[in-house]
Length: 471
Image (cartoon, rainbow, N blue to C red; front, side, top):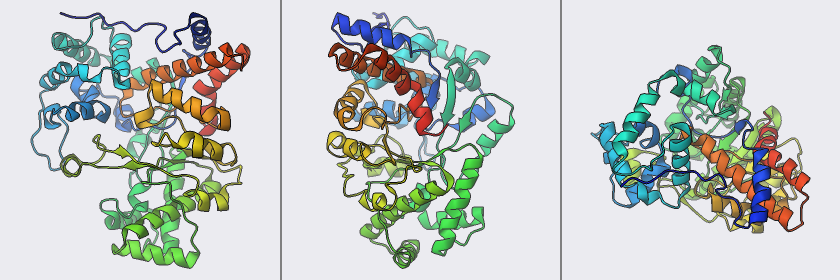
């Protein structure tokens, strides 16, 4: 028995009829605004080559750890979902079988943001009117693949259809940005830019760190055996990324630790980590020093700095060894910001020309640490709810806990932070609906005038992201 797929027009709005009416009116003013997507992980090759997506499984399942981590948690193997292995060992390659397996387990996503995003894509992008389940799997697979083969569903056409004004991808320091060069030289009007993510050469625990430093030297012509040469290599790569459109850097450290060492101390520490004979504490100290160094470089080149700490990455050692990074086994950890950021803020916190956007996976820090910090230091902004909290309830908790202390204008709008290209409109729609719902509550409580809420709705949906990322 198949079930109707419907996306209720008032979804996520307040249950109270009067408040819901305010939310609905606010939403009408923002629902069709262009999408600013200033931080994400989509593949620039999609827009460089503009080749059709291969099939439904390769588009929706295999690359999206939001999806396959849930199935993995219920005993469905990653191999059976076509997730590629590090050593090239055999995995399922039949897209129809992968899709059927996904459909058989689609109920596992009930109540999750992934379910809402996917249903939105199925309904609004592909026009399905029946819910995905075991019985409709073949019909879904055939229709999706049929549409993917048409010009209207090539990456650039979808980019335009989704009304994306700007999309930023994220690349490592050793990337040649060839796909971005192709996009730039193609004459296509879509704006796809890069973001500098230097973890591979700032984290001594990153796999291949020493070899990465050697490649870093080759790319830049700098002597990375010295502290000065190493820092200049970063400056060179940052300048190259900026020439390819970058307006921001991104730093995915295990913690928010920062440091402000003397030059001699930093040189000695760099020699230690470069040798590979460092302790865990020395690795953490080096990462902390590099956050402060990156903040100083952002004052030099005007790149916005993003800090994404607090994830115990690759927690499942077996999955990491077999499938590599970003396979759904990154787990949130408690994160302190007040003491951890103090060395950096002591040096640069008063600089209004510096823009640092803070993210967290530790929601307990919103009202206790992050909102007070962003509500004081000129250089700090709060990024939107991230990763596990990029959800309706996560967005509600963020606004409730951060707004009274940080206000709205010390936040950076919304970014979708996704690898799943087709979910971008759905993610932004959820954020816009939840912000309108929150603003409607303030109007209903007579804490905000409705015309102010209307201005704020536009700022939260569009203006703040554009301003925060200097676009």
